[in-house]
Every structure is written in C-alpha cells, then in structure tokens.
Amino acid sequence: MLDRHPALQVLDERPAMEHVIAGMHTLPGWSGDDLDGSLAGLDAAQCHQLRANYRAEVSRHLRPAGRLVDKYPLYLTRVAHIQRLFPASAWVLLLRHPCDCVLSCHFQAFGLNGGALAFASLESTARTYAAVMDYWEQQRLLAKPNVHVVHYEDLVADPEAVLGRLMGSIGLALEAEQLAFPAAVAARTRRINTPSYAQVAETVNRNAVGRWRRYRAHFSTRVLDQLAPCVERYGYTLD
Image (cartoon, rainbow, N blue to C red; front, side, top):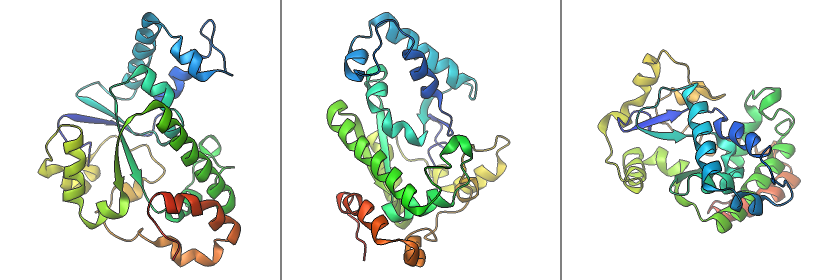
C-alpha cells in the first residue's frame, strides 16, 4: 500500500541499518557496554558518514527516488541508533494480536539467518516476541520516536480509513491506487523480499484475523502467560 504512493519508495526486508550499526562498533571510543554514551559521543562528521553509509547500502537494492520506507521488522530493537542518525524519522508501528503474530512467525520459513532457533516452537517464539516488544517499549520511552500506531485488525476492517490516517500522519494524501495494490504486486518484476510474500500479494481479507484461536490447543499456559502482558498492553484479550 505504501509502495503504491508516488512520493514513497519501500525498501523490502533488507537489513541496511544493520550494516551501518556494525560499522559503528569499529569507531574509536565505541563501547558496547554504554550504548547511549557511544551514540551521544558521535560527532557531526561521523553522523554524516554513517548516514552516507546507510544510503549507499539502500542504493544496492533501490534506485533512490522519493521518501524512503524501510520496513525491516527488527528495527524495533534499533530505536536508539536510528533516532541518533535520523531524528526526524517517522515510525509506523503495525500491531497485531500477539498470539496471531507469534503463530505467523512460527509458521514462517525464515532460514538459519532469519531466526530459525528463535521461532522453532510456539514457546520460543512467544519468548522472543515478548522480549522484542518489551525492549521496544523501553527504548521508545527513552528515544521518543514519532510513532503512528496501526492495528492490523483495523486496517483489514477499513483499509481506506486506516491508511488515510496513516498517510495524514506523514503529511501525504491517500492515493486511490494504494488500495489497488494486489494487481501492482502481481505485475512487479522485482520480487518482494519477505517470507510472507504470498500473503503480501493477496487482497486485504480477514483470513488471518484471530487465526490463533484455531490453534489454541497448542498454546500452552506458559506461552499464554508470556504473551499476556503484551496482549493487555496493546488492547487485546485472550478470550
């Protein structure tokens, strides 16, 4: 939907910022034990070079044109780094029922470099989800990013209204072609780099809403206890 807007360009799930962060760790005076201090200690020239490194990494996958949307999911754990280099960035937090999210991650074939061990079981996936979301909330309080929250279930129920509010939050008008994205996905010559490619290419539908309930027998008490704080925090229930 975002990629269909003429002013936006979406970088698929490519870890561009991860390459930049790896380079940060080689800088003089960088301390892995003091992230906040190390980030605060970056001078203007270093920040400029790191931004250039990021743009160079992005350009390996896209020809820069328009405002960039970088959708790598685990940037939830990189809030401090991104805010230091791009303090005016806008964040979109797309939430989904934690049980549905955990089930989806467990079912995906991420490969050895994509979290195979973290998502090997529902319990390990729930533990990973809770840890990532807890860390996101901690960093969100400290770094204070500009965040627009979207609930997946609301987007499915009323795509035009929810997408319209999202576009308004970044100062752009909703374009009709954004709601006709399945045909555009089918016509692409460049493959979308995401494990959930087949779902991305579908028309918006409710098939994945509440899907976890069909597998509830496999959600142990331990799994549900791990997810309960996130379920409550984000306005969902375990009913």
